[in-house]
Length: 78
Image 1 (cartoon, one colour):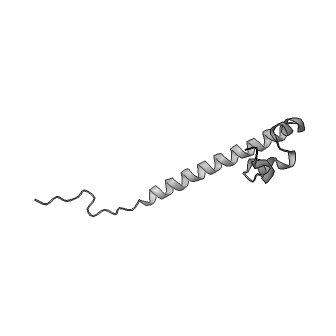
Image 2 (spheres, helix red, strand yellow):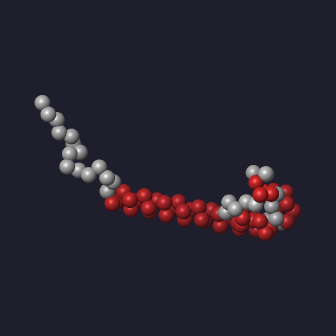
């Protein structure tokens, strides 16, 4: 007796709507990440110099620290 697969005749590749939703989700995550980083930069900029020194960065290093471009002297603290 022969059985026929339920997927016979159908492509095993993802449909184009899967790709659309994957791109949409990726865009949403990227937007959330950008907003979160922007908020972190604002929060750190609102701190005084003494508080920044306590966490090991200077005001000029805020964006580098938030965006993951930590300098070599910062990486020893992370």
